[in-house]
Image (cartoon, rainbow, N blue to C red; front, side, top):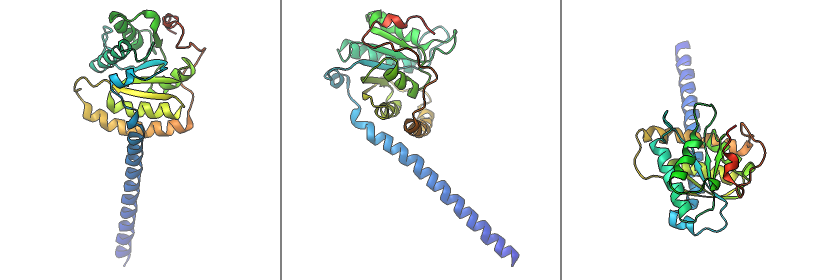
Length: 230
C-alpha cells in the first residue's frame, strides 16, 4: 500500500515538474517571439535607410577585436555597413560603441580607425568607450550622446534585441543588418540570443542605469571630443 502511494506521489511530482518545464519554455519562447515580431518592421536596407530624415547617428555596436587591434569578422562587417550607410547619407555622424574596459583592450579605437581609413572625417566619428553591453550602448546613446533617432548596425540575429531595447528606452530606431557572410559558431549564438532577448526584455522594463554615465557629449558636436578614453 505504501509503495503504491509513493509511486503515485512520485508520478504527481514528475507531472508537476514537467508542467513547470513546459510553462517555463513557453514563457521563454513566447518572449523571444514577441521581441522578433515587434521589431521586424524596423529592419531596413541601406537604400531604405538612406531615405530616412533627421537621423542623428548610425550606431555601430562593438564586437571582438584581435590582439593586434584588427576587427573580428563580425565587427568588420558591422563597420563596413556603418561606413556604407554614412557614405549613402543615412546620417551625418557615426557612433562607435564598444568595450574599452581596460588599457589593453579597446574595441572603439579600432572601430574609429577603420572608419577613418574609409574616408570618414574623425570629427564625424564618436567613440563610446563604455558600451559594455547592447543595453548600455543604447542607453548611453540616448543619455550621453543625446540621440533621439538612430540607425543601429549589427548582425540580424542581434538586431532584433537592439531595436527592442531602443524602443523601450524611447528612441526612434531602425536597423540595417551587417550579414555579408556566414559566421562560425552561429548556431550557438542563435541559441544564446534567445536567452539574451529574454534577459533584455526584463532589463528594458526595469531600466537600470549603465555601468558609467557622465557628462553629455551631444552627437551633433565634434567626435574628437571622445578621443581621450576614460
